Image 1: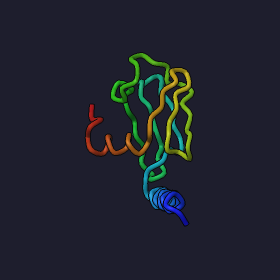
Image 2: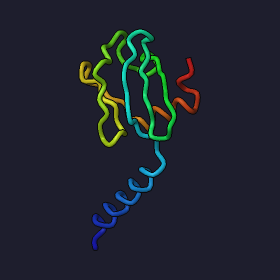
Image 3: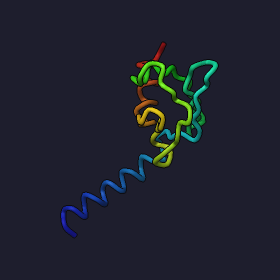
Image 4: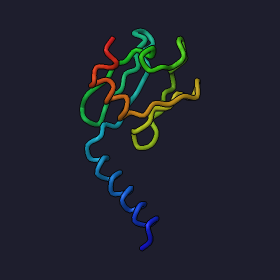
Length: 99
């Protein structure tokens, strides 16, 4: 086994380990009335976030949000932008997203 194979195997193992405890989105929607992105997580928590805190364009159409990458990514097709869910959760829980 060469170095590349060992590196790939290590990356796969790390991904499998993280999949067991990193939050992933199981549902996501944009609540138009409240102007909030609402994400239900695999951990049982639910986040409700103002789009302005996500560094997305102000007034952007976030409807049609898609969950990609086994719940690790949110994609907003109408503005061609995405958000990595574990980073979003870390920011929220570190109080960086507090409004």
